[in-house]
Image 1 (tube, rainbow, N blue to C red):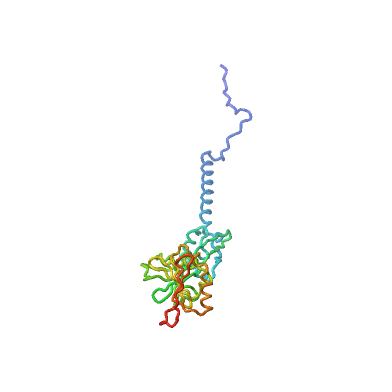
Image 2 (cartoon, helix red, strand yellow):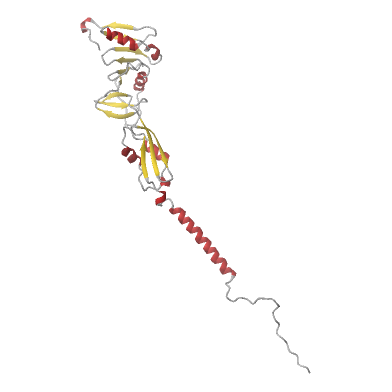
Length: 272
């Protein structure tokens, strides 16, 4: 009986033997996933650290527009300091904080990419003074209290009967409509009439009375129509002074008419 020999099967031609050194597919995927995760985390950490970087910090703070308020006071009120993170600066919030200074009417904050911060301000301008508790409150044209001084200086004075505001704070608008009426009246009479020592008083009925620095009293009447009634006031006052007339008062309350009352004899012609 012939013996049969079984030959081992040979691999197909061209087949490559398996590489015992190659890692399993699952391991390669895990490594790739870990690398991607590490890259994302590194990017996030780098992004988070940017605002705190010196490249993104406030480097310099300058002030523009300040004339009567010191730039140092404005910077101090803003709360900004060199080294602060630039991304943490809110221009609107900082501007509103600077505007709490009594002499500052408006403020703007400009941020530059190189870290420079510019604080631009518009100051209030002194327009009138009102006597209060032995001192003078300095007001701007809108009636905001911007300062307190021992004298009115070269400012006109506005007054009213029994002036006693329920509250008063620097940087706030005086809560007395009569004072605002007197301030408005200063703009309605000829500017040649208004000067240091001029007094403008508003009474409870809303009538206005002006007293010149040399003591001539002028009854102006209500604010409405005052500009037309007072158009010739400067010429009338100059005529009175030129002739050295002594008068008790001028009355401009009636449109188209100027009433002049001579000083009474027992007063010796003294003006008041």
